[in-house]
Length: 182
Length: 425
Image 1 (cartoon, rainbow over the protein chains, first blue to last red):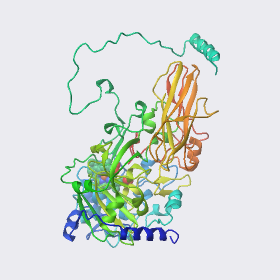
Image 2: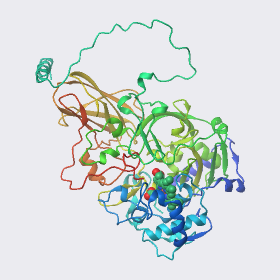
Image 3: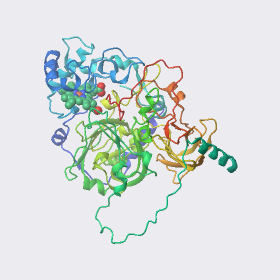
Image 4: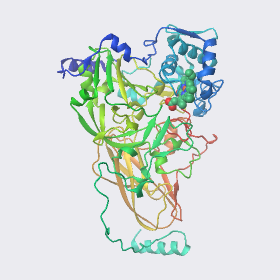
């Protein structure tokens, strides 16, 4: 980190003194909120909206909105498996990678379902509904107990088994030594 | 082989009745007897070229996520026509009215800004020729044993070359003014999946383009119309298409596309995040899988590229890897662009294996299959860049010549992921 900071500082200085073209228009906070329909959720929880949801609610929404594509129990047919059937191993074929054995961050689940699912008509579910689906999928994957309530407070604290195996590509480490995994 | 030796083997091969020599049939081919078609406002390909199309696997469970391969078996050149540039979508191709298009830059900036297309087009631009390659390119190479019917298109067609014109991202970031804590550019697309990827700020400031022209014309819808990111040398999925938003952050998003997908498994079970740079590749596109050759002279042709910089050398072997010779590189040899190579060759009618390997200006060498699988797990899905071998059978037919891996006890593994013929996500 220390070694590269000077570069970043230089970059920042260069940008601070660069002459602006004066193009583009400044956004008001209201406009920004209206534009931010699919908030980017960071692993520390920033970006998560207010709301909450539990397993029982998620179970019902899942059956109605998701099961047709991901299987009644998330076993993945015709599309991606969502519930891991076994722990990760280098022998595991890729179509068996799933949330419980391959996803390193629980926050990604909220981010992705809120922005991209259900596939054919996305960003339609409410934050509460997505929190419930996340709770349901985390429980089904054996990551949290059945009474888990997913929310802005609880999701960033969930430790995913796959996080232990995740590291930064050694080449990227060399090129960008300051890069860290959250 | 000298000429006499060549003629001798040729005679022997003919006697054996295996390979073919087809004489050019005479045709008077007169000039057109009457007026041709009138001027046309938009040109189309000759109807005789209609078979040159992107390859879409018949096994995909959805045509809204998956990939269409550039038909590199049937193309020459470092620039691909817009309609044949490879395509990878995760939620279909959105139809975007350029008048409605907006780009927002916000987060750790002095002033959040909104741009429309006209404003973007007023800004200083650059034009560069780059390759874009899906991290899933080569994925069929994960199949074991190697699939005999593989073609060059299905082997490495998730790469294309184009001239991209756009505004350097740096200029847009200067307009918004970066705060000192800014470390990541998180880009979001306007497709139904609102595709998200994180780019480190130093790369964003170095050479990323906010592109609105592909080979001089507007981007093709499948390639991000009206505006996409071009992130030279890096995996395609980070070059966000249909760009609608840039969030400046101190943390990466760890989005689905940089965790569940586009992460890479090592043989010890470690999973690597941020495998961004595309390592050196080359492939012989002619003669290649599914084609058929005749006795005598052929120019071996192919493409090479590397995300690290220019191609320094391509070597070709026509004797199953025993000897390697330098191929000729066709100018221009550009930084992080497709490079064409050629190699003159006479086929003597005997079964053999031909292959190419690329070496880039940083000294990175394209690995063999064995070497590749020492670095990456058998169940990895991405960044397959091992040498592709083609076997020329004695009847002139060309098929996959990749060696099966020695000593593997694993069951046959079907490929998955980006553009895989079996899509697993």
